[in-house]
Length: 459
Ligand SMILES: *Cc1c(COP(=O)(O)O)cnc(C)c1O
Image 1: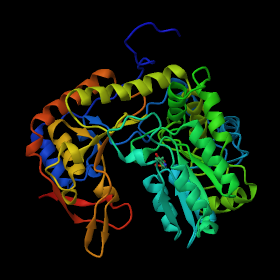
Image 2: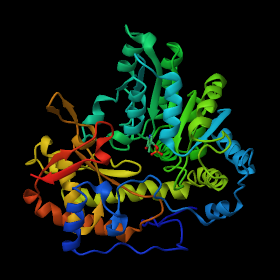
Image 3: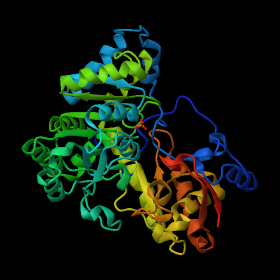
Image 4: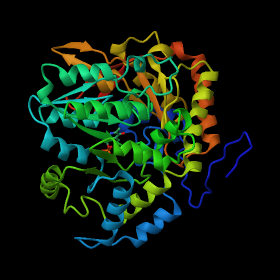
């Protein structure tokens, strides 16, 4: 539709509603203490606005709920599987399509085939579960983002890009025979949800072909990335998001997908590829853990809803609302002097806690301290992406992460503009008393993906 108005509206009306979790400050204080200052351990009904993640938290459409009723629950060869398979084949062009219960199951299966001791994976940035699954096979995961990606204030259209010269150095370097795969994460979740340009995807693909390495796309947010290309990259403004997505997939050998993101479902994933030999091995492993390859840990109804979501997510009105509502949150925070990763990403705004709470050193987890304060102040749940998630302990010596961020991830089609206005107002309030916010200290943590279970206390 042609739109001559300034106001961008939510492109849906609401058919079913859920109450929010209103609490008192006294209650939240107690909840936070009981949760060991780890927001993953807070019961969701004690959360008012939940910006912990955009993963599996989206609202399905009426049509997707209709898919839930239509789903065929046959054990093998369900009709819903063929709907799912065809949708993904048409979108990606990859002939081998394997469903999984979520993205990390696809990672685990694929990397158990191509990974192993001494093997090397290169990426613009591995997502945390991607890295963990690479490392679990004994392989090494190396991130090669462009230098500007770590300059949080720099406004650049495609800060998710991979550093091409660093990539080529690795591909022709002394360990090149151990490099089995390049993974392009679109959008780049770990570094601010920043998009990757088509030019960068094309160039990475060329290098992979030249040095005979596989290229996979971690496609969790492929539609958001496609829309950024449409908005910002020369030559794409007249293309549909679907045409752009198809072109992106055409440069790679396969993809990994968490359907909990851009397929707008509450659970699900898949991987798809050209290589039939890998697919054959993958299906054997799939049966051991996920289930028969035509359902892969999902119900037929889930497969059907994923297929529908993959179509809806490429709708231009939806994508415009999506990208604009996240940047609206960024605009609001900026207005109150809250330092954010610029520009706002596709699914989240990342607050730079290192800068906002400069009085808290990395070893006292400034981003986690801010996330806890946001909850305490107004019941808003966010996610730390900093030293709690990525910091290392090297024989008792603390090695901080390169960034201390609080991610405000926006669930798809769930919150309205007034919810976002409220979040901005809370930050306005926090900005005035930020000097009084205190750091935290870890009392217990497990070695892999420890941030999910860590226990902390205020310093
Ligand atoms: C969420 C995500 C994953 C993992 O998917 P799950 O469905 O959470 O297992 C992998 N890569 C990226 C970029 C993600 O955002």
